[in-house]
Image (cartoon, rainbow, N blue to C red; front, side, top):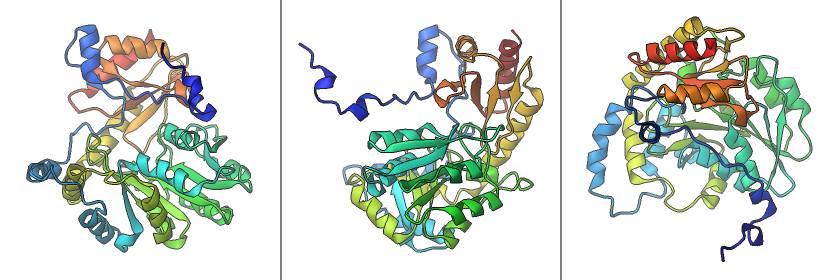
Length: 371
């Protein structure tokens, strides 16, 4: 007789939502018997991986019988040199997402709260709930951006981690420099501020837009923690590697709760090489801006709104439930991301595509939005 999960699963785990990743291309093509599907669901770099990372990986293959360097010394030193800090301010993770989970585990007691705002990355909530910690989401502005005043108003004596993304996934909005300064000034004494900058290289392509610099904030305030990743603009999502920049006391506790050898040798070799691939980063940022400008100019339909974005994706208000649109787009071989899990059942998130694929993505969206 099968075992009943209620016999061994804690109540906070039983209530967890299952994270639903974007549908894989191979699975869709097999299900529908089609070829040439386009995936614009997971905010991946359509230009592919960093060429320098690809060139570095073969040399690392011969050492796969060895455990990775648990301290990640060469990569941490290279990151520290790039940022202008000591290696003791850097922690590596199995993606920046992994570091967020570690932060909750390392810093939050049973009565502590993780605070963010509505329409933020789902992993902020999941990281809190997996650890059985209370999760609080403050209201956003009418534009679905972080409302600094509402976030400050949600502070309580139990607030331990305040997590914000800039640019934010899935809205593409950013926090202005003055807004971040106000947030830091109001931060409770016992709280830490986590700034998720997974898309920061894309935001740099929009210099006319006022947006905060997490590293500059960290240099002023030791309670700031900055998360960054190699998954997005560097094109290394499949290797799973990110990093945190923080006070050495925070880095120390992260090292105490992480799994041993949690970042692979291949991931570190690829990231170390990609770090110097400035041309790939520049191409990716320029491409994303051009693609977003096309989405903003060309996607249309009755009741439809495309939100401006400083990431590599746009959020689309379809003016009606988006689930049927998502299913019809799948049948056309275009994989987008429905947003009901974010509390946005009328919205879709669409990542930037290759230049060759943009016309097809836009045409499919416009056809279905007009239907």
